[in-house]
Image 1 (tube, rainbow over the protein chains, first blue to last red):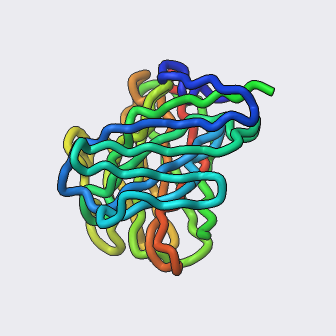
Image 2: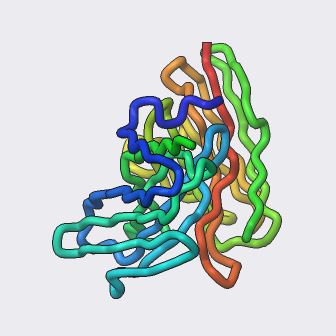
Length: 111
Length: 115
């Protein structure tokens, strides 16, 4: 496998649990935020996004929460599955679609 | 969704040489970008590839080291010049705009090792 995420913080959960991955962003002017999932040997895959005029958005098994006051994003994954094991990155659009990525969190799901 | 293909997928190169990475999108996109991901770390934007004009580089990246071309709306190249072991990284291409959702999609990356 690829060495993505070797030095990243790790969240270990049991299959079926809910997972919460947190992210702090830096630019208060950012107006658009995205969560990406990166599996070993692959590029980042879009999961869900949220605009700064919202504080919550739901997708299929995933929810993103945005707290602009403290510049914090979270990704909630319901009923986590082994296939959810990956590195998760938040990203903020700092303008002209230029993305600044967070440090990433490795999610390990045990059967 | 846009499908982004990168070539080569991996390479091992000698220091002092140069490598050109190709990025092909299966549909026209408004913007294309190049990112670097060093081992175990997050992604860092290198530059915005502008169609028909010089790329726009982020702080810490320069054209002489990372020349970029974008001749049309579906294709771009990144060259890593005069390589050193510190250039060992994953290089990723992304595309944005042109689809209904305007999501930034990524290629699988080019894994470069410099000896």
